[in-house]
Length: 436
Image 1 (cartoon, rainbow, N blue to C red):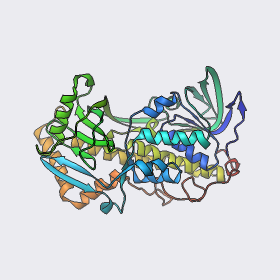
Image 2: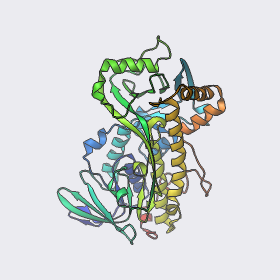
Image 3: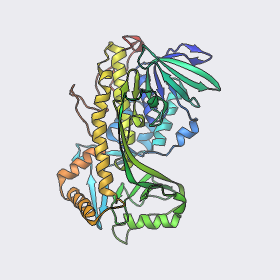
Image 4: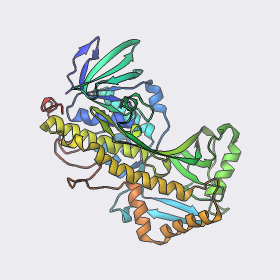
């Protein structure tokens, strides 16, 4: 139950302030609400913009399990497309990696991030904690004191929200991340020498599962958003202007790179969206400073080749919701104190997998024939070795790591008070215990 002191119809105090209404912030708010923990969500953009941002479309098994336990998967289960594998194409060959048999039954789902966000917003506005759009945060103060103060604007008025903790789900360039003092964190980064030209097309996919293609012209990926909408990508040079790519040129290049032979062709249709996506990796550690906690893109960025961005964000907030539930239920800050270390173990595993997929499938501008032969050798190893295929499948569907308390580092059932467990915290539970 959320009992916020209010002034002029706006809360002036809450336990957790969530900045950013992307999938990380909205999922965290949903999990906290189900545990009876007060929170407020502040988003700088309007609702229409947030619901239309094109991002990831692959959900790991653990992310889907989390959404189901949070009561946010009704439409996902009805409209999402479960996939049991991916196909690799290289050197004129086609090879399918089958997930369930290699991962004890794990799989992935195609369900766009835009749809996840729409589902979570609808739930939040229906019965969740306060959610404010067009509410840009200007500053966060008090990270090292007994409480934080979030300064924001809404409806043309400057406002302040006092809270126990602030969770930054507002991205790499967000205000919360910038509120951490210089020198308190270390950033590890890599920029790749290529980008992706991504398109949405009103064309039924000519394939049942995702196709990852290595070719002499560079990488290509065939994905989908629905049975009638294709999502496709081409490797292009950094700084490429998407306007220089005509529809005919795009389709011809996709056919060349993805087609294992000349008899296979994509279904063509009108291209409704076209953009260039730079490729980079970034990890900020630690993911906590005092009463400021970072989650999702505010803490880490991965190249999209491994389909890890949204799934890492979901894992972050799953652990964070559990930590807050433990704190306000028992008075112990143990899980909150280990949040960063626990998350970073999975983050670095996902970073490595994304790096592996990216560098194995893309062609660098200065790539030699030796480098290409090494890539093809690695792809052949995956196609010919069950052990290598199982490693790829396990990473793609979502690695489950064990921390020092011998429990999964990611979505799972734990304490019955957990927002992911079988029971929910009683309304009074969020009012017990210390602030940490």
